[in-house]
Length: 324
Image 1 (tube, rainbow, N blue to C red):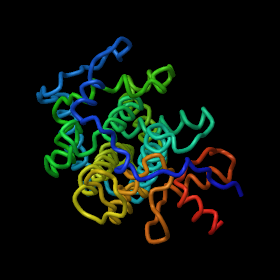
Image 2: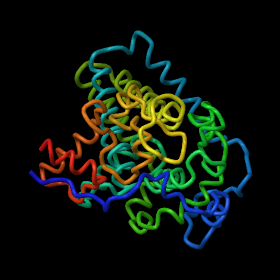
Image 3: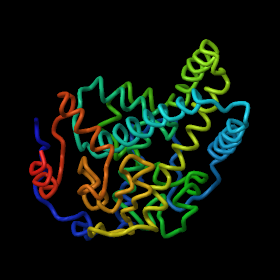
């Protein structure tokens, strides 16, 4: 069986912090440049205003999720739809596709599979791939400093959801942080039109529900608004809960922690302190006490010959070889 490769041995991220201050680094990244995506607004650093479209979208989505919970829409097929789409969008799409593959390049997969995983990520309605990756890379550069758009020191609510309800200067840095993705025309298209993917999905779910007698609207409501709200809040817990509760194993240079219950909800993303210490590692949970379901997916892809250049710190590489 092929073994993961490793990056050269390195110290945890906290020991590698550059001497330049976060505000100075942020000022460089936030300057607009030619080639920025034209549909973005790039608020100046320090500017704060309510993001009306996001606020309205979130309010409507949560209202529809409550409608989905009415007794007449409950059924086992609706629950199965929710769980399957949760796995497709949260695990395959956000965790593997957007996060470990596109943001950190912790592994390599064929281009067709990379685009499929990115499309699954876009079905989560958490931005398109360019915006998601750019904001995530920005977060890692400035984690828990004033330049971090979901700085946990501003409180649980802000890091969980509040930052999305306002314009944030970090959006202006996306173009500088995503040059590797912006050259791909499919990713540019997906970044602009990701919300529209819910329409064919809704049509498919309605047809399946009607044809099988499970109820077209039941599958739509459980498969889209209720599923999106569940994926949202579980993902946001990685920004909020894992910077407040849990334990610290590594010097990551910020307030990130390893949180078992968040890891259980997010396929291993809750081992956040380890991730911030070793951001380019394809595996976040270290040892059997920290189960990382996403890592098991990556190992399966590797067995199938679909994943290569799987990156691990030296200590984890040796541990993985010892149990193979």
